[in-house]
Length: 464
Image 1 (cartoon, rainbow, N blue to C red):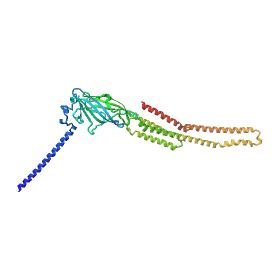
Image 2: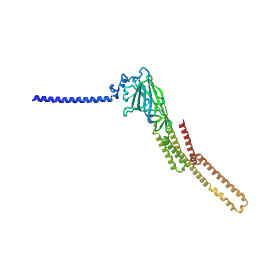
Image 3: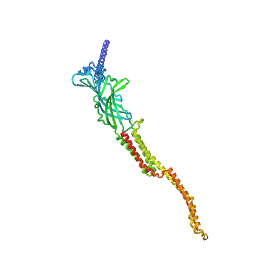
């Protein structure tokens, strides 16, 4: 019994072990199957293509092909033709001095190793680019760039029967653009898009535009928020580095800023504020609160407008922009109108003070000479009441008394004239004769000066 039970336990343990082995083999086979399937489907992303996955024509082309050697190796440079389609210019930043553009870059070259019979072309999956030699083109002024990959990497590979290869990419890049903002917002900016070879010098690779200026498409129909494309052209040059001379293609394009937006947003409000400050010239100088309120309000509003106009520009730069000059002119006229009222009010008060002093002097002078007036008024009466005994020399007495009165009157007249002359001299030296003339002159001088400065300003920044 013991032996039989041991036998049964041994058989059950062997069966259990056998089942475990079968399960292990099943899951291992399934894992290998899934792994090989994924490798076969996704392996091309890493350049791990097998000959069985390619068409027979491509298999023949790839046989003995070395993607690490350029075409015409040891025979001469490879000529690579370039063309561009500008899909969009998304943003132009004055703060960072760059622009962001989405472009379609197309490159053509001839590889004699890829010649095949017939007149047809082969359009290949973009992931096959890992099997071919491609140029090492880059954008030297690029700050950030990426290749679009939705839903797959936006690449195009097309091989023609004569060995010509067409390689197209869709790229979005943020490219530096040195800007001169001295005439902002009436400025004209010239930006470039440069293409160079990273590792191959002029002895290995030569760049050229396929159709000259017609190699660039899309700029004619491009619509931007603040700019309009004024002109563009292409050029071929070379880049000089310490390691040698490298091929270089440049696209030059000029952007003209649309000034109408800034006229409506900044120039018109600032001009209206200047005109508003002139209203105080027609308000009476005695209305101190009204004129002061207009002057202070326009100054504060102009300050706010100047701060708002600078928010979209670099805070620290060496440019004195055209808009800063105009806002400075407007602020000067507004502040000048406020100072004009301060001067006019001061002269009015000074003039009033001098008039009061003159009145007090005249009053004191009249009071001090009141006795003389009484004597001169009583002399005729004394002449009538003279005693009859003194009638022998009446004419002599009257003549003497009249002479004394005339002399006293002359002395009084001389003193009064002297006081008036002195007060007038003081008034002419210390104040304006008529302070209201200040406002009358300001009504003409301020608008005329502002008009002349505007004419000079717009002629200078629009024509020069």
